[in-house]
Amino acid sequence: MKFRVKDMLKTDILKKSKLLGGEAGIENEIQGVTIIEAPDIVRFINGGEVLLTGLYAFQTCSVQEFEGYVRELSKKKVSALAMKRGRDVKYIEDKVRILLEFAKEQSVPVLEVPFDLSFREILKLIMERLFSEEVRKLKYFKTTHDNFTALSLSFKSEENGIQRILEVLEKLIGNPAALFNQNLDCLAATDLRLPRLEISEEAQEYQPEFYSNYTYLKQMVCVEDTVSERYEQYLVRLNLMHNTRMYLVITALHNRFGSMEHIAVENAVTALKQELFRQHSIEELEKKFQNDIMNNILNGKVRFGEELKKAVKLLGLPADGCYRVIIWNLYEEGAKEPEDLNNKMKYAGLLYDAVKAEFCDIRLLNDLDKVIVLQSLSPGVRQEEYRKELKKAAAGIQKRVSSWNPRLRVRAGAGRETEGILGVSESFKEAGDSLKFIDILGEDNTDHKSRVMFFSDMGVFKLLCQLNDPQMLLEYIPESLQRLCSYKRQQRGDLLLTLNTYLDRNQNLTRTAQELFIHYKTAAYRIERIAEITGMDFDNPSEVLAVRIGLVVYKIVKNLKK
Image (cartoon, rainbow, N blue to C red):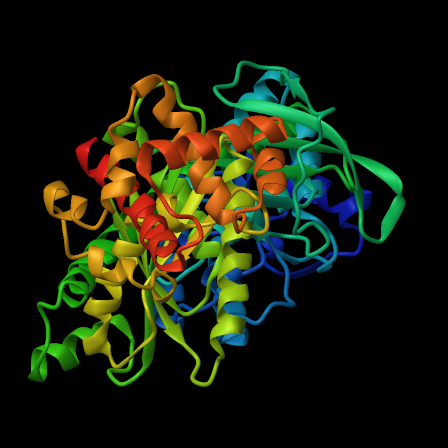
């Protein structure tokens, strides 16, 4: 028996709907159903469908453009059109009038359904009447595929395409959806109660009822206003380019998650990947353009006149603002082999995202394995306050990258604050010097993992930044310390470590022994041996100061010879 529009109108689901026009078409046979979420869906209509629309797809188009879409629709011989009102749509009364004219001319019934009635229910009703289970799945796959394809083709450059895709997915499956990046930051969500994601240790891999190219996880979660109940949550892992990972998250708050929901999710994932690739391409173009400008400013190639004005305008920065440059990089603790450039660059994108998430009002530049930050500062912030903020940010970045690889460690070199964009190149150089000396002079942050080095803390060692010749640097190592540095290799390491610790602990043997986990007598013996080898006078403050500086210079020389 054929399923006609009049049969659909008699169902309980549509008993509150209102027939606005096109009564002559109630005998039309229904052969399918499609949701209009983008104007381009007209291209995918075969004829005989019931069209479902909230007119949101035509939200911003003009009346003339809308007439054009309806003319295209007239060629398709659809069975009926069910519409909702309630959203802010420009010229809605004119657009409804055009639809009613279309309904009369083409004998296509136009229904207005309650705003709180889910299109998913109408979709399910029609498909259950028309198709067997397997055919229904294939038809539903095509319907969802066409909807997401049309939606992807309709995005404008300034539109949040990810949010639109999630909203359509929510309509199809009747449950909220959200997208999270690899740092578990929420990029978009349809329900404000679900802005956070925690992947439980109890989360298990889940196999859908059909073959999928994606990895599904399933876990139980609570929601803010229903903490006494637990709901099934499904995570679809998307592996994108450059080791980037995303998670599409569906929380079964309202409806069971079955085979039809899986079909919708699979098509949504394809649309999301296309949209993420589109956004990435746009961002890369913008980043390349911005990187060229930042490179010129950081390296002092833009200094005067109209060229400088144009550069700061394109970056959206005031020429007379306060700035500081910070250079960030990562290293892998305990790596068995020396880090090569490919290994350093492996996590560059991860570091970039983590830094971006921790700061506001900055400009970023990826430089192979480093991330360079040009930070705009608020005037009047005290140095002590800024130190705390930067170290807190470093700890936050460390936490993010550790969730990806627990052995990764964050380092940051900070140049001095400068007034005016022209001073940025000097701050950039200072940040580079700070990062170069961070393993020699720097101390662990409060999280005991990340490190931050300020150029202003380097003291006399700022002068040594100018020297790259090991032979010239050796002149800054006292003769007594040079004797120890050239002593027998088997004992030299222990003696240098003991000397360094002894001076750092204000020549306190007890604390030196505790720090090195050796007996007090062993520490005392080593200091006596050092005095014999070098002839150092530990009671001479000037010589002790020279030796302390010499120990740092010795580390610098070793780094330069690597």
